[in-house]
Length: 370
Image 1: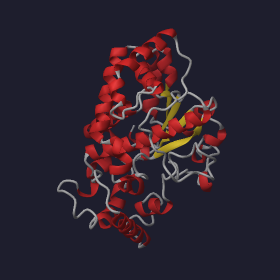
Image 2: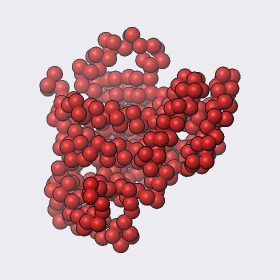
Image 3: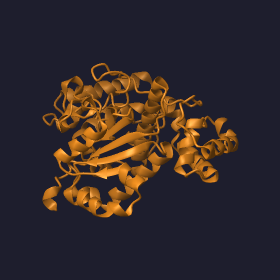
Image 4: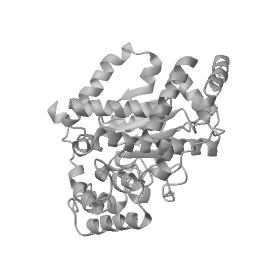
């Protein structure tokens, strides 16, 4: 099986040198322990501009990885990932650079067709969480319905889970994302690295499609240099931006947004991803994601997976219920992966590097959104 998995690319080492130089002076006045991974406080505009200028100067001066198309300086020069949340706004040649903002007030989001039990449960749920609205926590019907469905209609369980999610948001200060976080750290430095993916368009039935180049996201290497709690904050920022994009699209098109497709491209996955510490960290990431965006996916497609993983899935999927089997599909190889995507996605939404027609800015790797 060793020949089925390529070594995981070490990306973080390429940009650490630039990161330290660009941020050294800017972080000198921060409290001990915050260091270059500080997110709690914005610098003034002059410091931010100086830090960005330093980063640009380093990239232009031939920093480590300058000759590597996946190296730090190349990723920053291309501004990889800058449109990962805005591809639903317009065509791939006319994306907006401004990331969406998550609303702290309830929104009139469209709902799907509800059963009688769901309507009754939603009404009871709404009454039980009125106090959360006063804390700028979202309690609109679409949000409540997702939590209710995540607990299979159990109002008490849904309330407990929503309150747990609100505590998680408060612990991360996610309501202060736009005003109190040092977003430059995420949106200018880490966006090309975590998450290595974004929203690529709509499926054949109008579903929002998210895509991650999971095998190339350098998670083991990132964990070598970054505390897990900081990575969780980066991922929380990613999820808040993603949810804001979903909601904006739902309002614009007048459709329910809880039927999305997530595609995980596993090409590049290495054995170092199997380390216990890496697995535990990713488990925490998934747990945090579910608190921020529960019950949003109709399908999860794992493509270009190691052959052993795909074979194991074929052997054991029969023990799962039909709904889960349809929701999660795992395939290996380029041909099988492309065939699966074509069953659910139009040609123009499939990245060109996989054989589809999506190439924003002429780039088959779709780096501006992935």
